[in-house]
Length: 324
Ligand SMILES: NC(=O)c1ccc[n+]([C@@H]2O[C@H](COP(=O)([O-])OP(=O)(O)OC[C@H]3O[C@@H](n4cnc5c(N)ncnc54)[C@H](OP(=O)(O)O)[C@@H]3O)[C@@H](O)[C@H]2O)c1
Image (cartoon, rainbow, N blue to C red; front, side):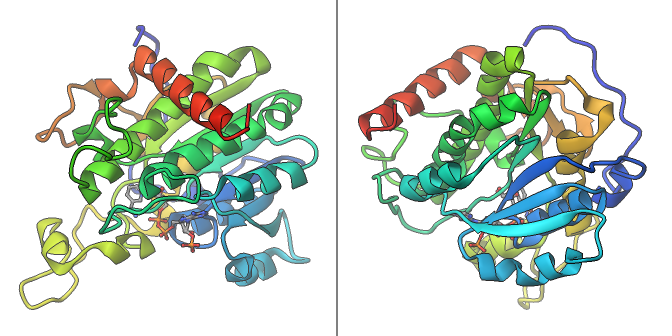
């Protein structure tokens, strides 16, 4: 990465999404939060709509957002609606994009799946974690590019994970066709791909007034951990030997986990900032990455050459599926 001035942000890891947007008026701004019907996504939606934005929850099952939609119905200040989107299926992404009209001020690519136990494929034949977390968001962002552009000053926010630190993107076998499937490697690589997506957008769409940044929300107990077995939960310090869940002091609440997402989607503190990675509401240091890395952003995830190569790989995949 080229040297740049780090932004100064007065929030710690414990700040909530609502605190980060205190005093920010998002009236008239239209935003999409994928996976907004649960976990970190729901608190992201609450904070953005609470600051006045018109938020669309993009979810596989819109009925799961009924309560969230009702929370803002009639009372404001912002509004919440739900729309169907299955990121694992490009036909669903196409339909979502086709139905979107008008400007889009922020796209929060928050939805994700983690540690799917066996190698599964999307309808288009991509390994499911990469297909959902990365390719679906790539196709969505690319499909909505004109809507982002006409907004004049739009932001793309990609919710990655500290799991990216251990896994560079494997360009030789991205779909686990030749190596044995490993659910954690697949997750980590998909999260590296997501950081590279933000870097790729930052490199291509700056002249359209579009910025893009990635983030790690921290450790938050949500539905995401549904595929974690007891042994893994113990390794994360999230379960004791008797099988009881443990709340570690570094765990965050969903409202704290959503803080960095809304900071990047809507705070004036990061206006114009692009192509970077944030953690605990601060810009992260670039580190070497690998099995011992515990914090920061890995050099392999912010490498411009890797971002360009991945962009080309995904573009080619979409083109081969008739999406030029
Ligand atoms: N929780 C953590 O500790 C943690 C740590 C690091 C990174 N993250 C990242 O934070 C993001 C949010 O996760 P979370 O913790 O809030 O977990 P969550 O509650 O499980 O939320 C994930 C969301 O993704 C949606 N989703 C999954 N597959 C989808 C698909 N094919 N199409 C559309 N939506 C889909 C889910 O919708 P359904 O309801 O339809 O399943 C769900 O709303 C994820 O990207 C995750 O990798 C979380």
